[in-house]
Image 1 (cartoon, rainbow, N blue to C red):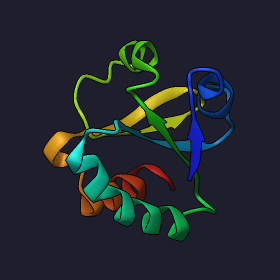
Image 2: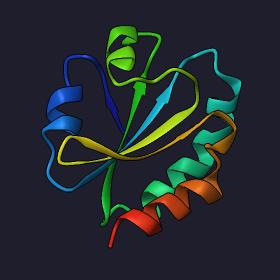
Image 3: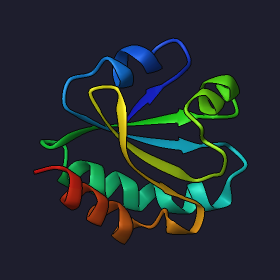
Image 4: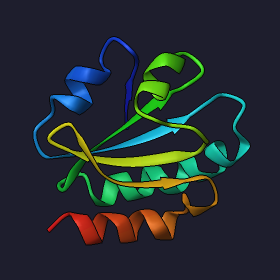
Length: 106
């Protein structure tokens, strides 16, 4: 998974072609850390369908607020710079992420 920051987010996510899944996390977020190994497996399985990136909201708080990320973990799917689907907090599970990808990427 590609790590983006406030300097690369726009280029790698908002200006990217195709689908981009963003994992918004922070260093102190235990559920984020628990989800990461499963998310990395999903990213490997779906690398041909979407770009997978992660943004540490501790280091890019304004960027997270601008993207309306209000709780963690937040998993957001973008296409053409627009949000097409999002999972937050308890809904951000590996199963739900796979379902979100299957429902949105045809």
